[in-house]
Length: 393
Image (cartoon, rainbow, N blue to C red; front, side):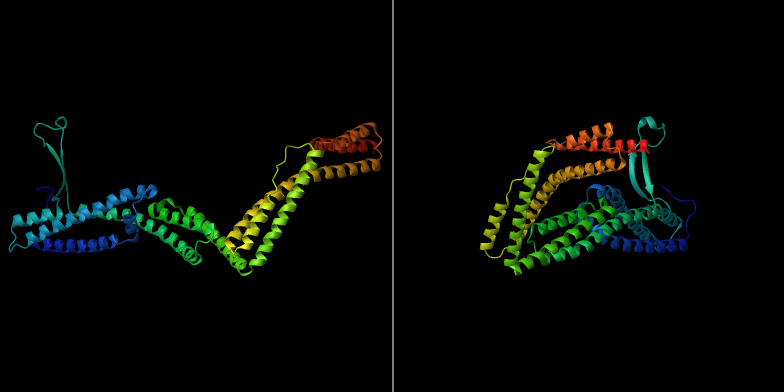
């Protein structure tokens, strides 16, 4: 008898063993049914996993399938034991058979042919793998936490995302997709929902924090935009007039930026500065068209966004050009203060100081003016004043 232990169970031991195993199997059955309804398993069945989740789920899925197979084998062995015990009287052979079923290895898992090169003359031709109730129970106990860890992790990520997305989705449904920002937000929420459905374990906590935080921030910004749209719709004339003042501000900024650029090109040696065509008239014409039609706050809001971007670029161009002009003025002022200092210290007529002063003055008066060269010349002038005044003192 394969796997039969030396001790043959008594009738009382057999009855006790059957009852204990029946109770264990009943408990396992309830656990397996409960696991079959686990939210993590439901999600994995509904959305075939990919990526990191598939890597974790593949061995867990194999373990779960083996648990169900072993559960079926357990039931079969127990049914055979019950059938054998149902006989009216148990003789020694019956008890030996029941001992083998309950304590031995009565289940054949596989048969593998042994290559002739690995056999002895009178040895077996096949290797038979056997297993018993105790081994199957141990194997199931070892597989259980492997499966549950993956299922719990999948459920945890899904619940985290869904709990954070739910209020955003509710707000989106209330607001509607009336502006591009909201439509883009809807698309990104859908993308995250797909990610958490197909590969939740790829979403590490820090990744979730970042993505959910970004969605929440964008939702707040979109809600602010919609508040603006409602205000624009309520006071359409005022909103149009405000936009018109921004068009005029853009025109004036273009004008100042162009004037500063021309002045830089005339007076300062510098790399070519950016040129920006004056399209304020086009914005004005678009605004006039909007004004003539029924209130379209979304279109006006979009126009205001483009105006804001154009004004921001124009301001930067103006600041760039004006900064160069201001730098030349600042260098001129600094040079004048150093000349006054040289006179106060009594070194202004020193030949070296005079020569350095003439170099700085000449560089400042050049058109175009090399600001880098002027800066070096004024620095040399300042250092020379310090040296000469130190000798005299």
